[in-house]
Amino acid sequence: MQIITPHYILMKDRVTPNLSVAFDKTIQKIAPFDELLDEFPHAKVTTLRENSLLMPGLINAHVHIEFSANKTELSYGDFMGWLYSVIENREELIGGCDSGCMQKAIDDMLACGITTFGAISSHAMDLEACSKAKQNVVFFNELIGSQATMADALFGDFLSRLDASKAIKREGFYPAVAIHSPYSVHPVLIKKALKIVKSEKLKLTAHFMESRAEREWLDSNKGNFKDFFQNLLKQNSAVSDSKEFLEHFDDFNALLTHVVKANEEELQKIASNKHTVIHCPISNRLLGNGAINLKALEDKNIRWIIATDGLSSNYKLDLFEEMKIALFMHSELPLLDLAQKLIKSVTIDAASSLGLNTGEIAEGKNADMLVLDLDKEPTNELAIHLILHRYNISKVYINGILEKEN
Image: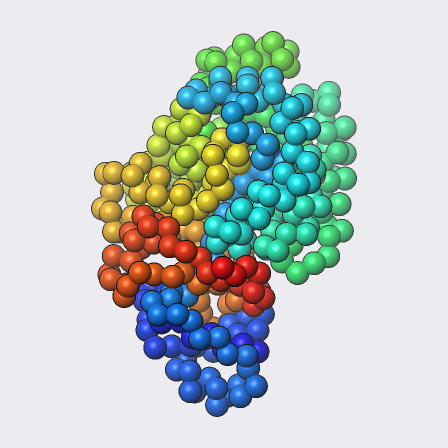
């Protein structure tokens, strides 16, 4: 048992001074220090510096660890230009990201206060690194393949990767399933994968409506994807439209990433199924896909959270940086309200979307916590200041264990 005494605690809806937290793997009690010491007289006591803030660890729900080798290899500014550059440099990117490369990406996230991440794994090259990560990991085995003739082989590969992730037995590691996108996965494969998701109660995610090319291809089999699919895969039409794709996800609470180009009918469908939208603002800007309409999501009570995507479409895996970009990208929204929602989106809302018992400094929650060194007493605009000023993270606890200290 441990007792930690910060100057301030960022609770769900307020900042609270003069309280301490008793915890082991989970937060046992939040109360004045003397009360906790009476109840837990043998606990290890940590008293923090002046203006220290204890807050929940951050959750990055969507990241591609396998593609962490990119820095200047890929082309930005246009989705199709980026996609062709990925194909052109694929072997170099994959071959260039060894275990050390992936470990660095994971360590960099830890240094940025990310205590949980959702790894979208295309090849299981990142399985070992993720299994050894200090963070909690939701390991999304990705299914991809639009050609019916290859369905059996592709599904067999997917199953072997899923089984390998299920063989990892360590606290805080959760096997899960990712369906790549409506245009890249044959309906037969989707149906087979979702049977497993349902029977084994696995978390589910997918990319959806990221680009104009996807919009035009799914709507009318036209646009920039037409040449792409004809030349590379000998396909003249999409394997499904967006309505059919979303109907596969009925009765699932999925996480849908991007959703920048979704229309009114699709948003209504997402709302009715209580899916969560993962917003990756830097990735959307770098690939020329525009900014999602957060107000349209909120008007339909669609929960949205922030994530970094991978280094194939970002320059760092830092949720404080991601929130800062979002704060400026969505300039039509009230500043303080947006800042507060952004903090929630990478803590309590992300935890709820992933079905994890974390994301909040509250009794009974897992002790995934950060200590930030503020300059002075926090004001009612703390959420804005946390995002803008990137305070030093002096301690990172994951499941009650001090994993990083500055």
